[in-house]
Length: 134
Image 1: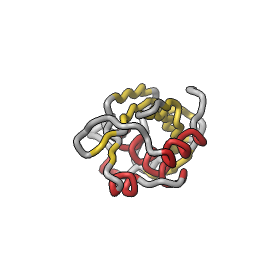
Image 2: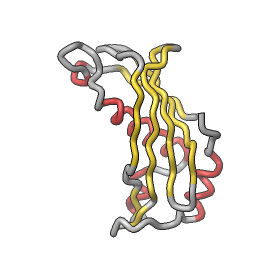
Image 3: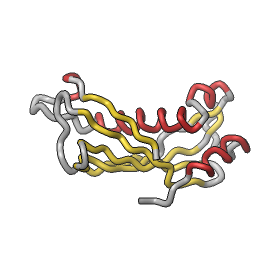
């Protein structure tokens, strides 16, 4: 599991003073990007090699709101792996309180958006970090 902390900016909130619900998917993206970086491969490197990870499924359950200036924690785990796709799971927390949880699924595709198998080095990296679904 990868852990990332971010502070909620005023721009992340809505008129009610709570984090706008769509921003949680952005939090997932930030967590996933840092997970990949810390695992040894960056999105930039994957794209330079001619591959992409589009989102084909996203889900998010909301439990409690985050507010301006909260220091939240985004926990990102790799919980699914096939020959050509990954599934990541996320928990967004404020201290010990679970604010939101979700998943995203990403096929591995080439520049023409055709699904392809992972190159061996990327596959091995993912296998090393694969966790049982939580």
